[in-house]
Length: 249
Image 1 (tube, helix red, strand yellow):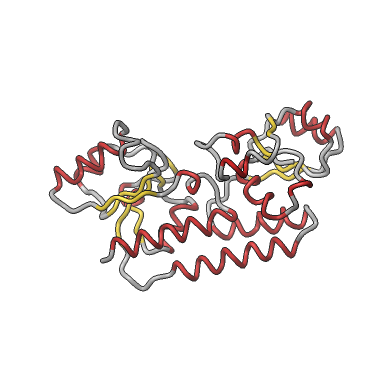
Image 2: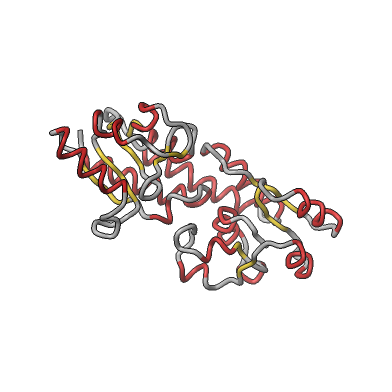
């Protein structure tokens, strides 16, 4: 059983569907999920309460490092085998989580295969072209900064994360003045054109182009790619590489 939405993405690729008792409720929400809706619909969801989990008696519980101490204690008293995963900020940390989960689930070979696919994606994304400045918006008004998995993937795909240049660490809000005074070469956002017309990100993109006089490219990064790492690293790097090629020098 997984109570962790990012573990959901790993688990469904590592073990047979019939072994999965439930996935987290977040994976049922397209705004928070890394799974396609039709994939998430195949599995029961769970709210993750101690009572619910203990009643179902899964052989392995994969939870978040933010799990409340009382819930952890209840799992321990019930004798449940439990893994607690944090939010990995690097590809290497993702590799470690994949291997740990695969071993706990009894499928170490599948874990190594997933790691190999990620390593191939990293090699494929590599470029000798000069880095292009970019902002990657998590949503309408949040951007990814330094010390994040997305920041590392942007770097590997040939971008320089302009949020780091502004001084943003982790994920957070950016002052409008920074973006208008010093816009990046490309702004990457999850929303398709027209769907986020009223969002802060869309306004910034328009204002940066109009006021700076510079050419600022825009690109779509599907929402299901912004939430997690693990196997999601593969399509994320592929999309970032595609954007980098389309932007050019």
